[in-house]
Length: 121
Image (cartoon, rainbow, N blue to C red):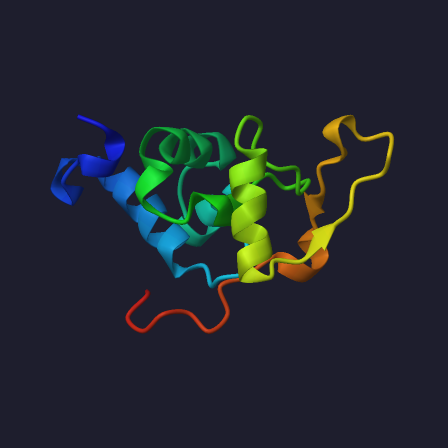
């Protein structure tokens, strides 16, 4: 069974909470793995990254990113398509950057959880 077809009640509680946060991030904005862990008040960037790697396919995974704004290795083109569609602020890559893949402009794209969804505690 793929992660996209797992019923929500089959997910570990922490994973379910991480995925819920990923779904709150507005289009065109991002949170880092560490931001998500901080929002939840438990775990850390590695735990959030693991959840996203195992279960993130059913949520807007491209909105949970590395703190340096680098695109997810192996998924750069898919992520880039989402960022361009959503208007996520990007920094164009320099010619010396391998593959000339842009990075997320973290200063402009990072979401701090403002305008949180109703009911979040």
